[in-house]
Image 1 (cartoon, rainbow, N blue to C red):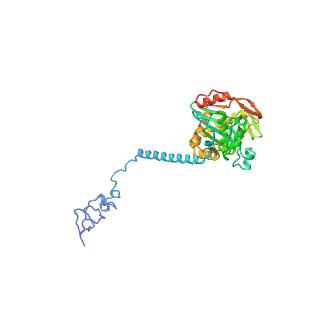
Image 2: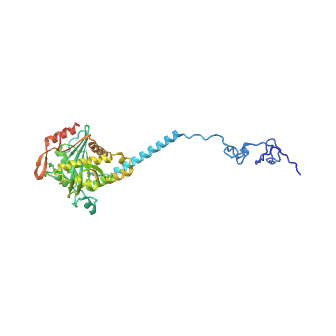
Image 3: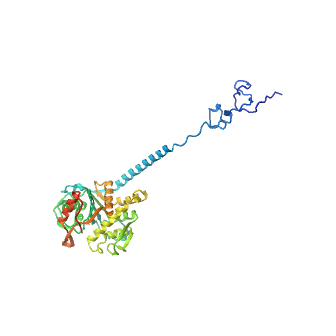
Length: 390
């Protein structure tokens, strides 16, 4: 029987001989050691396994380094900034592409010189474009063909603040000679007519020319919206809160409103701004239109709408598809226009009707031209507006 040599008892699983122990043939371990235990000789952790310090027998070479939170926060902020920038740029170009740039102000003749600030002509038309028979009935729009101006507002954003001037559609003005925007033919002046006749004769270009001819104020940008688009915008922002001064019931516009503060949906809002017969006069109607547009702009331009994509996209989608503007109008110009209207609501601007001197033929309204001239002079020179309108 072979002699058994006993030491400290540690069994070696390696093939290399233990240092100082008996050795057999080269590279062969006799199976026993001298009792010495090595940290690297555990299961899978010895130097023969490539120096892995994480094996079961070798323990840890050192503690894991602490997370670099400063670097992580920096990367997170940069990522958020990039995502926000991409989203913003994408939204801008998406919305800008939806504008209907259909009005060429470059063909308007004999334009007056510009002045301080920017002047917008905002037009509400009675267009039924895109409305189904059911929607026409719900909105009480009727089914007249074509489109006419239902409201006209001059919005001037100047150094001394914002001025909103309503132009009654029954204003008695001179329609000048003009060249047809589509036919290219020259037409003589038809003489004095109601202001809304200019639009029915040759659309936006002649309306702009007529306003400029009678005021001497240059129109920088033009924006027009029809019945359907107006109602869609109001519904998209969740309705507009208004303080109704009295009970209003008008079968022509469909208005049926009670006195007091309330939120108007699209159909109610359209009925309110179109209400003419119950209001008693076109001047009273234009005041209601100014109040509502200012309230709409004030609500649409809130952080709750602008910073919330679930409200921002439906609002822009509802309005931009039906909004007709001039060829040079950018989304930035449009946003500036809304912010200017918002300023009127905040008490930072002037809201008025064009000064009226009295009645004129066909139940129309005659402008007070000395006051009109003074008003335009103040606007063009960037002066504080002191002229009062009706």
